Length: 533
Image (cartoon, rainbow, N blue to C red; front, side, top):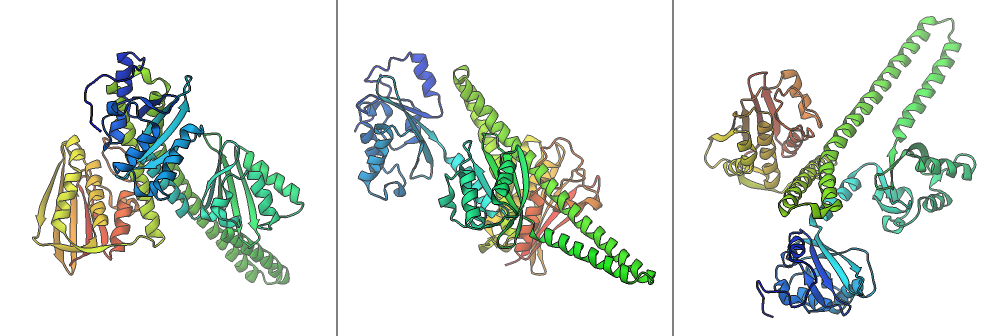
């Protein structure tokens, strides 16, 4: 089939030239089909999505089935799409038009992209289809689902009709069923079925217990402690979500309840001892002192755990909301009145959305890596790697950020043929995090220097800046997640405080270490130590 270039559409679209130009400027593909399923219009972005197909003007007049078969023949689609046979795939794609199936459909392309297709009837009996690149959104969703699955808590999410749309395995196990079989069930139906199977220890009347659980679930922010039939205790929290649905979290508080029970038992035992030894005040006083000391220690441990949880929630809520607000804000602008914006503005807003999405993905990746390391599930692929090459690659990757602040990043001392035994991806991330940390906290016009040397069977890569430095008392604290202490510059964007803790954890996983040296006004040096080859 020949490819037409710069010719008029063979079918009159009925649209003014400026409207056609505006449609061609969109970052989503639009196709229009008549009542016979024949293509009457496609904007320029359609060829951007399907790069191996003929030019859009050469496709006018083809049926929707013709287009699907072209996708298959030209290798546009991933092999998994036609795994059930080409004819079955074509029939399922046509059904989205013929049967009026308006639910969005994802199609995976051979190059790894994911295209979402939405279709609607037109007043003249035809169809209009919208094709959007949903790759990043689907990857973000997959990351989110992985994060929820890695959590020690049990999570469930409900739609505006209070029907389950997603849960992790922890939630499914608590309710005694597979996660897939729970989706679509209403909260009340699932609750009653779970109680009927005896999964929860119900105190008192069953209906009264169910009513209390329903009240907590439907409150704007509800909380209730429940006991599992297996003997565990769980704090259940329910919250309304911004889309009109709800989120439910089960947190295992069994150990906390056991400590409280042990404390109650010790209190009762002490009271019995005091009554039996009223004449031996010294013994009673020692017992009272012991109980008071135990109480103080338990309170301190609980306060420390609460403080850590508060810091995590405060930091995560801010760091997640910042890029999400940007994504939602700019996309709402484009969605509410797309005709108000010039193509240049659309491109600028799309760039800001992409930047915010990248920052969000970076934060989620850091959290996932730290979670995997803490759970012992981070697998290293060790290899012999030249340290110098990795240092050069990392400086190149950070050059744009450094140039924006007029900061010189240079490599100083580095022995030739200096080899380390490490995971290449992890080593790249560690050096990049250290350079980014130095650039972020160094004033404009400053310097960052990388040096590498070997000794004692180890390779030491040092990243030094001439920034304001950090007080010695703060060095240990900034190696803890979500901590940023003692940096004196004000021209950097505060991150989540995960970079240095992640480098430290990865270094120790390699059998190495991360050490920090600094003093106020004397710059900052981070030294990464890894096994030499």
